[in-house]
Length: 103
Image (cartoon, rainbow, N blue to C red; front, side):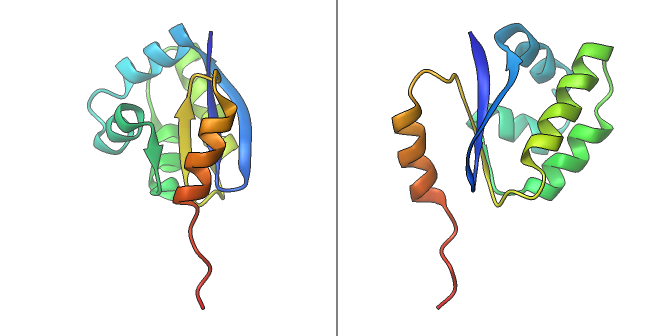
């Protein structure tokens, strides 16, 4: 199994194995913005999340996974983490949280 990410522009792709994601969660335990993102699986605080991911300390695998995720979501309006099993439902959720254009 893997963990994937979808952004405001659609499905971005896989960023970690389940074990890699578990290791990332453990490394981010004391970083509130990452703990919230990983716990809820969604964030609209992308610049703050990207900065925290780039500064995350841990093993080489953890820092590479964090950097890869940061690269994937940078510039997105939001990001959703999911297990990759149900793309249709993720697309539906992404459409619901997609920022609306100002009128």
